[in-house]
Amino acid sequence: MIMDNKNITVVGQAKNYAEAMNIMESKSPHVVLLDIRLPGVSGMEVLKDIKQKHDETKVIMLTAHYQNYYRNKCKRAGADYFFDKATEFEKVPGALIAILEAK
Image (cartoon, rainbow, N blue to C red; front, side, top):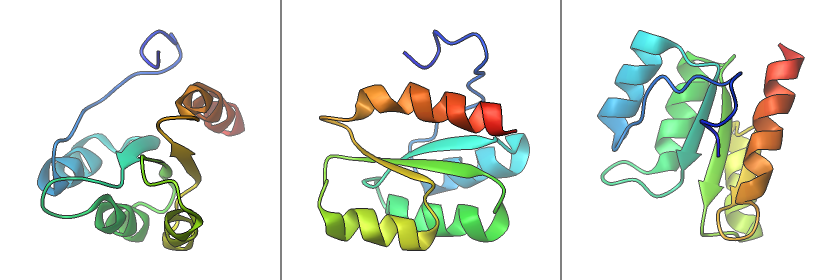
């Protein structure tokens, strides 16, 4: 769905913290789609590190843990968007377009 948009270029896909931070340093993406659950270090920690080192990068959090607790925690950590994968995934392309249009 995301790759179908000709205005979006996927620069990498990470399976863990180290890969995510390597992509951040080498590619400097404008937007990151990030799941809360990652092996090893949680997506929350990745979010915090991205925002500390690359504050201009927009982060869209995705999760199956759609409680207000997680939404609030992600927002406090700097997430720009927060979507439930089960019921809101179709909102991701709209968020990406809004980010692109704001640049």
